Length: 321
Image (cartoon, rainbow, N blue to C red):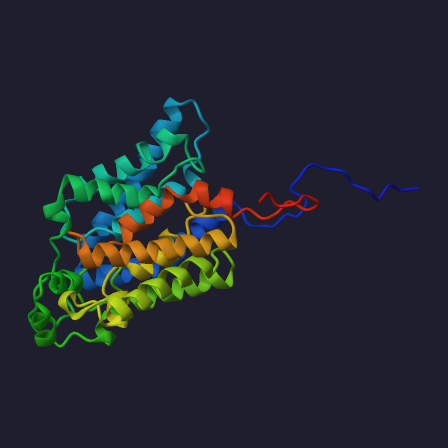
């Protein structure tokens, strides 16, 4: 009689998804936003994207070689880190500085912790934070989008509002439709909300990411903006505060990173809430006009606690009180 019982170690439920497939899927979903950024800001954006990706992959390969580990740069994690870092940089940013930031993201923020799956902080955001601290002048220097018909300052809408120069935005006739299509100053990959949303919808449909963190993040920021924003810093307009910065890029593509975000649904909701809260606090009372990157990095540090206190009850055991 044929034995139909098969014994094996976990996991017992398998899917076709793999790390490589997930990483390259997210990478491809981000490409439309990068193409839009190149169209909006010019060909120089392409060199920054290429420099960040190539430096990230070369750094990963070099460190894995020195550690006598199997070269796994084809898994897409290093390429995705370089792409996300480039998307968080202005198109005027010096290319060599972008390479330094990409090296720091991989060498210090990823490989120093042991490599993929062991890093505490999102490498791309940590690389951006390093560049903000090291070269703040270049991180706030933005080029004017080529698709503008009227002359306007190259500063981002959030920068203008932080400086109290709301009239500059009003005189330029910048509206929601402009911000949705990317017709504004900003970083390469964050300005075209339309392309980011298309990529996010595909990831949600494929269940590569879940709705918990983005929904909690954006809802928290929207509610705080509506009730506590205040016109003095231009935060009273909910739609403007969501589309003017890097909220969409951060909420859907960076805060949802598997390694540095909470595992449980409850933990994800709390994680997103913290990101939205900290983003609002930094924007309203902090020295920086944008707070998405620092908010996500701070919440990355809370993930071990969230995973511990939001873990589900083990079947057959009573939950400790």
